[in-house]
Length: 172
Image (tube, rainbow, N blue to C red; front, side, top):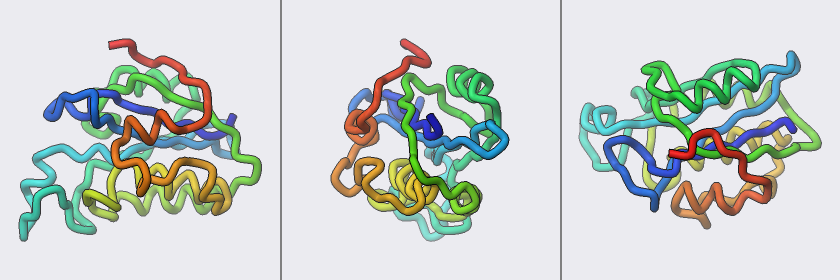
């Protein structure tokens, strides 16, 4: 398997609800490691925007994105713990593994790093949109590989509709 999508079922520590959730992405590199990350925007990043618009972080401003490279084991270990200011800030509960048959690693790596400058917006520029764009690039433009964020308004529903077995990272 060369793609991972992971979910935090309760969203953020500041917005504790099992309705919304939060998702992140990962993909296998040529060296066998995974590049992984997520847009983990927190309330303080929204409040520092000038002009201030609720639910918006302007392009180019810190948006909570982290991008890392690790072995699969180390990646899952960091997703289990969370609490890292440089990411992952959140702990994650579950993941799904998928196989993209035709991959474009360079396109996905480029988009992953670019996502740090994309800002944040509800809807259209949130954690699900980043997962979709980056994994679509990895899957050589295949936009049927994952559910569309535009038809899945909540990260938990987006994750649940991915056609793959659920694996547990944290059960709390």
